[in-house]
Length: 224
Image 1: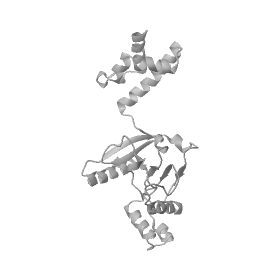
Image 2: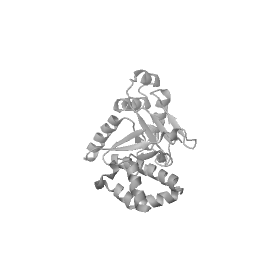
Image 3: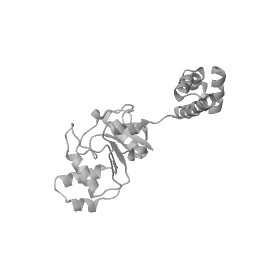
Image 4: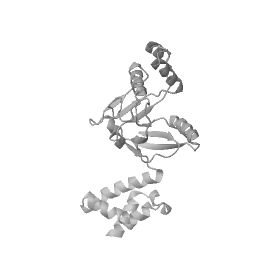
């Protein structure tokens, strides 16, 4: 699944130590599956830093939702449980310890208007019942990666060229192993040290536009 992070610069290396506390789902790295939402955040963060907004695109491995070693909490909509959880985290100013022990938390966003109402609820100006009755559904989405372990589920999305090369690599390596009866390690060593791969990785050759079979034929002529 494609997810996006809106900021004032590209986030290639995620460092949880730089993440803010007292956020909806606690301290962590936040992304959204809604690009338009990330664009809003990019503009906002850009203005704060007097810079251009930037959207970093990631691939999220949804297998981690099923990984028994990863503790996940998911809210489908605004509800009482969501409110209690957000309030728990908004009250926690401790930079060293989370208010919960989840690795990944997913659910709707408390936008500016909702945040104001949450503050009124925390300060005792309105009741929980009043907050929930006044809450108007607003399509939104966020995922918080709260632990270093959970960050393994995120990877920078490959560009068009990188993606094409990746798929060629996979097919060529598989063909090498089958046709020549060699191990994956041997096939990898042969392929990635070849002149054929060097030319493929050079964008100016446009070899990435060729089919994997064409690249494979080139490789075979080179090494055998």
